[in-house]
Image (cartoon, rainbow, N blue to C red; front, side, top):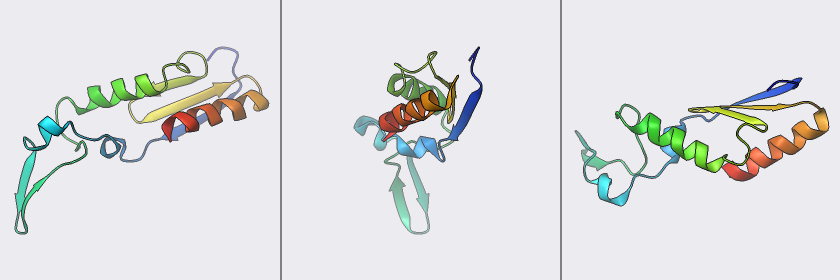
Length: 99
């Protein structure tokens, strides 16, 4: 981040819900309500290992950019650049990987 003068922050809204549960784990996370039994197909909030899984996933997705123009902390991403032209390229690279 040293030498950077332009910063953008991205918040991955309900980020955990964007990661599919492993097929073997779906039947282990069941909840019941007046409408019946339901299984999570995506990672829910509140499970002990979800933050670590999410961080590892973000680290894999953005691996080539981390330390060069990106800092990731759970569902928050900071994109930093020294110049506006580079910043547009860095943001584009992040968005390409997230989509």
